[in-house]
Image (tube, rainbow, N blue to C red):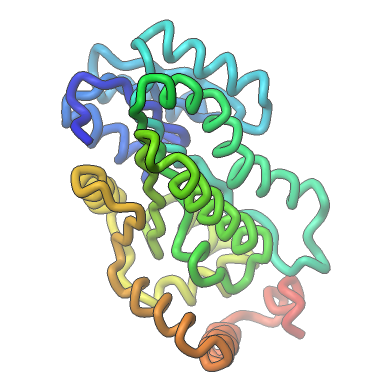
Length: 278
């Protein structure tokens, strides 16, 4: 997948992995349509890219807004050849304490975003016989996320949707990839360090492997697109963890419980109560 001369849509482009993906695509010669609910950060990213790119603020939980955003990207930069559906939220903790509104937000951004974008982009791609859709999920979508049921559940769903798209349309010109990093040095991980979710989940993530710079994740994503790989693993050890899970599910579950217990031992009493751990 050569990006030069193509229009690439990047969601969640205001900061973190999305901003790094936008920079990488622009550096590869693409015209980049950037979108994010964070308007100020989005404008800063577009300004840093220079001319020939377009910033379109959008609330991805609003289907009408998503449709208008895609139309604006097409009008401004031409037909979209590649979609990097990167936006995501890490919200909620124990399902006994997580509100319906929080579950709805997690599903809207982490799952329905991909459904809405596919619905808008697939008809044209299938008609032309080519297109590229990249779902940013998480290693949590292959493994799990200790501390947050909504994040784990929705990221599993995101991986499943990417698999389904590849199986259903892969022989009709659609190239699908699924990005599944572990710890990345982003505002999401930093925010996790400061709340009840992060007090447990972020400790496990940091202990599991290196915390990567977003630019390293973006570079690996572009290499995967060149190689036409489905599964993008910036942390290669995730493949080993995934294999262990498949080979001995019971042992993997007990190991995750041990990891949770070890992380919980460093969490304060108030945070444990928030997580339903005491």
